[in-house]
Length: 403
Image (cartoon, rainbow, N blue to C red; front, side, top):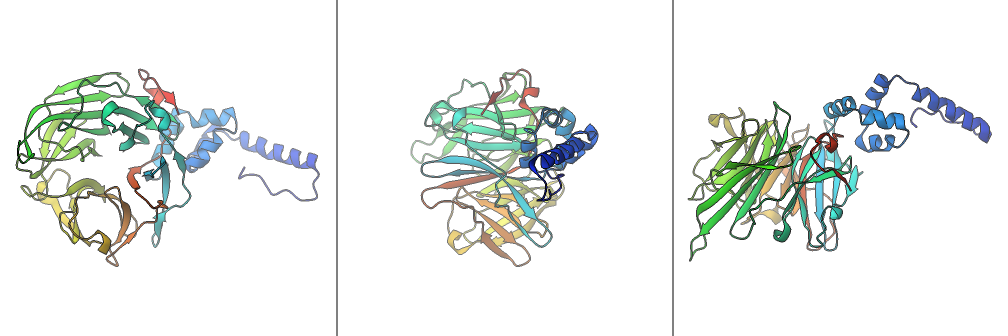
């Protein structure tokens, strides 16, 4: 362990064994409160190793106090889903972020596959949400849409009950995952739309039937909230921010609005976008602790708008206009997602499911991120992730499965 002294080469085997035992006894005899403090500052990869050292450490690391303490000190990273021709896998990576340097750490914290979650060989599982170390997962294969909540650090997952609505084109479904700031309850919101299309142009005309449903972890059942207001897009997942979920939505003319769902009161309300009535190719995110909107409508630039005061329409500010890299310029239907801001002001973005890139505001340049992606018809997705050791077994009504 890190507390062991280097052992002189002149020691024989028995002397070395006594020395190691003495050092380990010293470490094991630390008061539990001090050990909790020491362990909580370790990176997640080291904590996972420490769980295997002895039963005493395992009990400390699984103690609810340690889990809460670690959450306050956990550093944000990314969960990355890479899909290649013959394999799909997930990995969790950390950031290197100092005042004058930033990068994705090349030492992957964890790499895992989720094939075992589904019995279907054609399952295609993606990440649609991340809150407090939990990942909200969805099998997007239309034949067997299935939802999961997973903690990759504890290697646990639960499968949510199925719903009666079957998703077939032109029907759409979208989800959101978050936690109430007051009750602490984790909730999945599901919005289902039947859509009527114009018989000639095949454009969206109206929504003859819709329903919104909520699943609270630990209850074992979905609850219906009745008709889902507004018109949703299956490409827009609910963004969790300040205890609410947010979707970019459209009216029947195709103009963008924002739907805000209060996870505590379970109510929808429209939210003001920066430019009401305008069509855009956009996504919602969080930058500088503000709700942000990335607009990729232009052929040459990406506009980043920040809502400086949450919920105040007049506080929308055009913060950045980023010139596209030459290979990304031109007409595009890709959604651009803002992932995070670094200490030096640089921003990390996701371009559709194609690539990640940095934008350096000081130099006003963009640079593609090397993700070690193999060549070929591959895709990559990324989402903000904060590691935690919160145990899914805390939700007593759920059947927790290890993977």
